[in-house]
Image 1 (cartoon, rainbow, N blue to C red):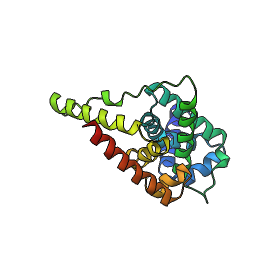
Image 2 (tube, rainbow, N blue to C red):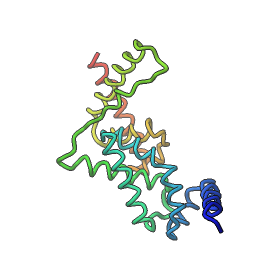
Image 3 (cartoon, rainbow, N blue to C red):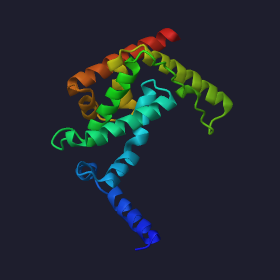
Image 4 (cartoon, rainbow, N blue to C red):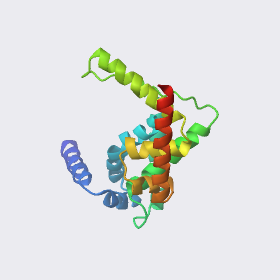
Length: 195
């Protein structure tokens, strides 16, 4: 087999793998299938970075955290149990825990600069208004407890259901709903106080 036909065959196999459900890919990954692992990385890498950024990591630190999460996933791949939470829920829990660990280290500096990301489709006036509103919201979110910040991030930014977010946070659905309710109430109060 020539190297060109080998590459073509590998591409076909990767394409076929990308059609599989997470649980099937994880089953292959547990048996040390690196191609299945790569498909999972491609599927969730941006989401992990998004979680890390919204929890206050800089772009570089978020990339490092995502890479670290996937290294941990590979090293501990046998710990995921299909009868428990979904792979996505388990993965996001690993990511949240990793970001919390990084933020607790003394050298962590909050470099959140999400508000500086422009939207080219808006006029400069609209961009300024959105920037100011986004900055107010991010400032208010930083005043929430760490648990409330994570709940807001998972539910609104990651668009997870209450059940998925609760599983990631290790709390009941009722506790998750209560966290979100208290967080929204506090956000309204803080935004009102900011004017």
